[in-house]
Amino acid sequence: MSHIEDIVDALEKKISKVLQKQRDLEQANRKLQEALHSSNQELQEKEQLLVVWQDKYEALKLANSMLGSDDNKRETKLKINALIREIDHCIAQLSD
Image 1 (cartoon, one colour):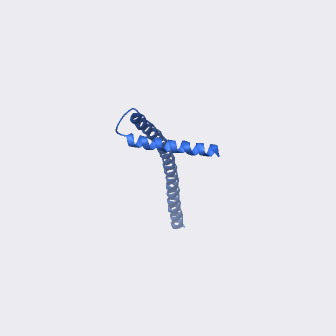
Image 2 (tube, rainbow, N blue to C red):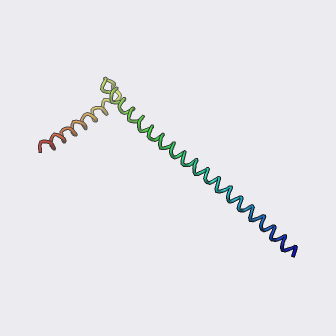
Image 3 (cartoon, rainbow, N blue to C red):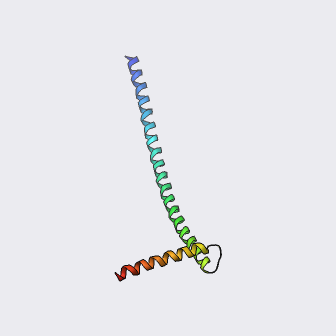
């Protein structure tokens, strides 16, 4: 009978260790999920900031070319032509 009790005790200890390991892993998983969520949120903020800076850069390039900078004259002319076509299209729609 003592032998069976020893086996049961050993089995209980192993089950206890497995359960503790499971709890530890679940806790580690929760921490990793929180870190992932935080990183994703930070990435989205950085992407939004990048878009803002890209827009500012494009506006600055356009302003520089309008002030006489030779670097981006072609781009500026294309942008102005596109705006003129868009305005012409709007006028045509209004006159219909």
